[in-house]
Image (spheres, rainbow, N blue to C red):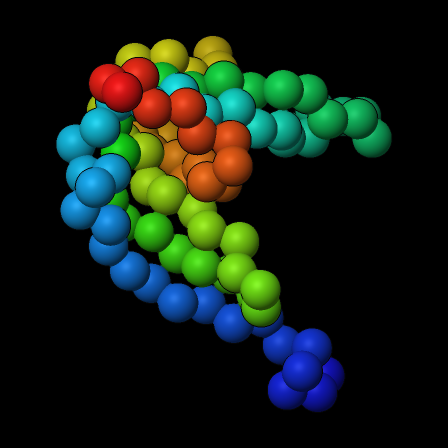
Length: 89
């Protein structure tokens, strides 16, 4: 793989998002199928983010999940910035 094809990753912190309640939706594969379904999350943003690729796709970390899919066992989720909806604004 050439340097141009390798994915880049940059970590950062956005204080404007830290502590904000938000909703996030995304998709995931449905186990046992070739299909994907929508997943919804509600929680609190930490302000931490990761930028992937160039141009970057920014993903924010959400914790304290009060809404998550029943089968989702993790305590946090990374949400694509374009799929975040701030609730406190």
